[in-house]
Amino acid sequence: MTLSQIRSQIEALLRKYATEVEVYRLDKVTAEFCDEVADALTNPKSGPVKDPFDWASVLFKRMAKRGHHARNLTALQNYLSRCLQERRVLPQAREVLRALLPRAAERGLIPRTIEDPVPICAMKRGMENAGKSDDSGSSGLGLSDLIEHWQKMDYWRQLAKGSLPGPGLAEGATA
Image (cartoon, rainbow, N blue to C red; front, top):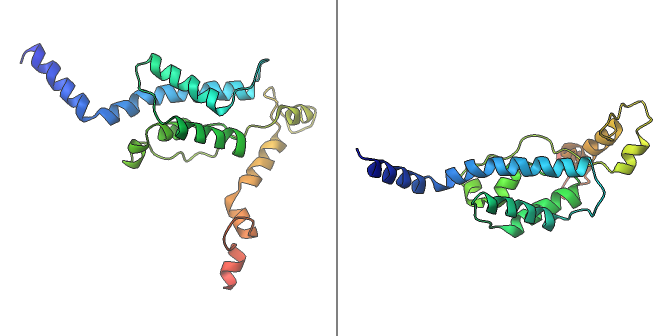
């Protein structure tokens, strides 16, 4: 077998498994991006705060440097705005990847994240808790902030109280 035959077989395999290869290559980029976002949000420096569109453009520029095609800007921007503005949690690499590659997610190539989201606590609250005995540490995040956030995010407790849309567990049991 000659080198040109081997090269053509490799190129054929890369075309056949293009989606899988793209998921593999973008996985590292999205992990680095999420680490950068986490660093920027947990250890703020002076300067303007970035909004979800700015973060999406940072990721797309990084993807372009590495030879990836930027697409699904709105899906990524929607995910980032849900994380950063509505839910106040750090974005997760798999979910960013799912927003970038929806077809791969539909095919099951990118599994859903099973870890609990990590909350972004306000620096002011972190500074208020710094002197308390809950050992806020050097990150400025107090244990009471984390517990309060997880209690707010507890889906089953909210469902039992009936604070989520639909019937609560108590009403569903009596019906």
